[in-house]
Image (cartoon, rainbow, N blue to C red; front, side):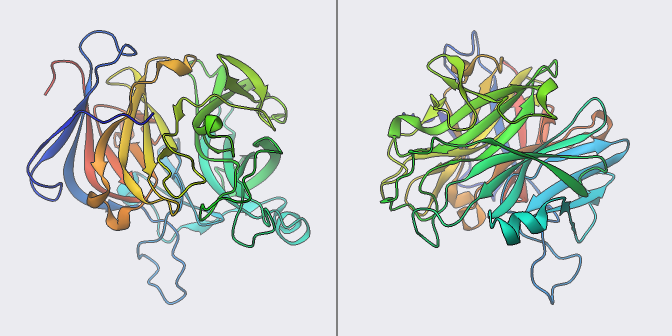
Length: 380
């Protein structure tokens, strides 16, 4: 069930001098809870992908999913996707190179021209201790249900030895059950599937956790779910991912069932859908907690109701996530866009979309007009 948030606003809107603050009262967070403040900041736009042929090279591009980042020495690398991923690099977020550069897959011709598997978006990355870069992609195969427009996403993984300019595909690792499509859906895009996700390692690099959006025809399996894989299986991942289901990591990543950690309020396949989706996760060093941001869709065209935040001190406990609370209303977003994420701003601490401290930037679809401040109990 999607709960009503407890939040307070000083001022009439985010474009004036004001802030939005939220605080939790939930058994998942013992004692006085932390809080989150969103406040205006100078606009910062990620390079994204420039699609217009006559556009200026340094103009702002488009972003159509999470934009993962990593450091290699003193260089920050960041990825953006519009059916195919591009990369930029620089000394910090403000100094990322423009225009971004198209990356390459080792199986691109076979995938697109022979097998016609559909496009792929990079949603998450992780630079392993051995220096190799892993990424996970959202793939949209066509046709689905005999429709030229519907799809059912699935998730695969790749590895790179040159910071993501060239990738080796390791295969698909997360997919919904074969009988879980709703071909009579009124949804504009999806008849089912697992996609729109983020990935993060635990504090010991023992497990990789996948936070996935699920569009199963069964309402009980719709929402945001979680799966995990041993990090040591990253080079041979197929069949090594297990979904959280009925209190256990028991269901296979390929074709298995889920018990959502954020279940829907109303069916994804009805016009009155009400659902969280598109999680982005980071470890917050100031709160010592994992933080997830979420979209909330409220119609078949994925109309955005707002941006929500949730906390958990322990990735291994899917039931420990706090009640999602709203931090931004759709009217504060440009064209009510999707894909919220926190990106850390401290280059000396190598902060990214996966690591942030007390103050970070809040992006939605590659645009940031806000800082997001994480406060311990009693802080202001």
